[in-house]
Length: 161
Image (cartoon, one colour):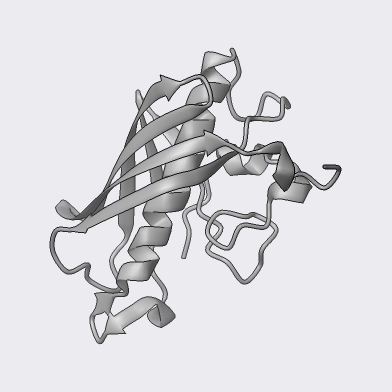
């Protein structure tokens, strides 16, 4: 179950790119993760559904990896959008990122039926490449952390290419 934010970066993605299983607002079967600023960090909040279980009482690691992946690409989009002088809700199309690499470390089992909070720190490593460090918490417990290298979506991904 997702928490709905007033100004998530995913809300500003154009319809052609709003279908991601993790963060696409138009994918009714997906998670529809939303990423926002919280101070100088980014945040995504989501409560896993029963179908996200690995074993009774614990969340499937693939779901956690998906949360880290989409939170991180959304965080990179937020950061570059802000660098370009914009914020979510400005009615300016934000840059869209895809994952170049994803590394996840599972720190401890993630409990089911608990709200998860992904928190990200973004750093630019190239004009078209950003690194995002994301930590996933269940209440105050760090359950997983990940590093994503996100790149601006290649033109080959567009319909008109």
